[in-house]
Length: 190
Image (tube, rainbow, N blue to C red):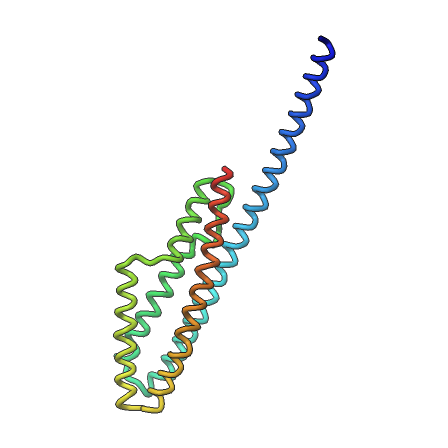
């Protein structure tokens, strides 16, 4: 009988050791996921800020150059469109800047920021498309009647860069989706 008690206590001790080992491994795994999510969200935030800065510089420079040749009312829809996209992008990705991955509420907030960054409401998407189409048509019509060389140059450039922009958009969306999956993994573990 004593022998069974010894075996039983020995097995209980081994089970306890195994449970502690699993807890340590689980904590390590969770810490690695948390650091990964934090690093990834920070990278996406800075990538977005860099793109916004580059876009603002390009639009400002093109306005300064084109304002001498083009009327102001032609540049206004394009500036409005780019401004809407820039401001919305900065607001949406602000939650990625200082991601709280330690708490469940922080992870839920981070997940919401990721969803905001990748999706537009139907109304906002329609507004952006309408402003973009109106601005593009105004520019193409103006150039067709005033500067045919620039018209064809812009048309060819647009045909080249639209597919590149779509591919880049898909790649960026894939990165946000990967971050969303990592956040979901962390939420499952808690």
